[in-house]
Length: 432
Image (cartoon, rainbow, N blue to C red; front, side, top):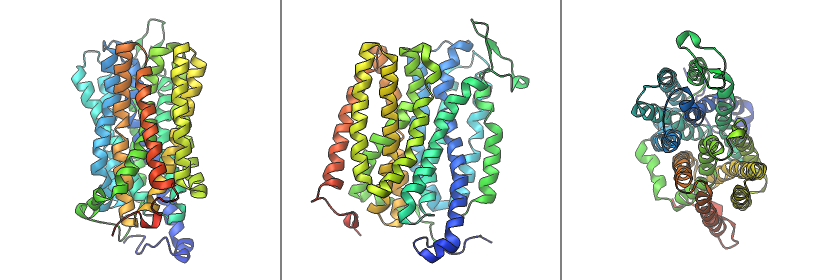
């Protein structure tokens, strides 16, 4: 029998006596499962950096593609994952979507040990890592049902922000774990020109046991909420809502920037300042940490206002990156990029905070997933755009001009629809 037989978090008595403990339990299991999904999704952002060191011979364009393909597949899967919770139930979907991450984790560990592995196989494994990218849409859709409207911004910020930490975790842990002979019993290491020995398979194998543990935890600890299942057709009404598309654009500007920069940053640093590659994890770490802050301050001061501020800051950060790249200053480049990362993280939280106020409850959940699906294409497009810019001009500067223009348009949309005194009021932002 289900632990939960009724669900009404907007009822203060129900929330305090029963709802809060169930919601928090599901949230704190959702966080590590989502973090693991991001780890698998972004594993190629660091594995690709090391492939040629262990005997492969891929071009810069091919390496950027390996970092980008999980973004393309993950973003596409998010459209399907968005409706998975409503169709099959939150717990059921989390169990499935976490357990399936074993496939790319084991596959990568096997493939990187053989330099004769065809590039096509590497592309397939990169595509399978997109399974991790799909999880975000279902995770936010699921958690949005558990909390009252007044706490959704903070809850979604915690779930998304700590989950996003998976990007920085994989970028920080991988350089350390590949230097240890942890899984030498399933394959030998490679000695580099400097005499260092590395076991690149560790980058994938290290996550196998945590994936199994988290799948079990989700099965026994999470819940399928009553009254939240909907047919796909019932959920699909969101595509007719004008504000679905406006919020999608804004979330592409914020989260799309975060995940795209995270996927590309290690390769970008290696191409411009290779001696500082060890610091590449900082961007994703600070952005993920900033996301819950963005949700929290938006609950206090309004999501539209915070979104406007972060878009201005992101524009300033992008201009700073261009300026310091032209000077050849790593310190200035890093500082400006970290400003970009932090602002994009806060913006990811602030835009998500806006959605529950723009849509009724049963529409807000799929809208959260739908916007996240489009934004995830940033993980594909930004590395590809950087790869094109670096291969044609030697620097990523040209790509940043595109980003600045996008942020300017986003700032205008946010002001016109959600900040003007004469704009539509939030209570009237959807049509019954």
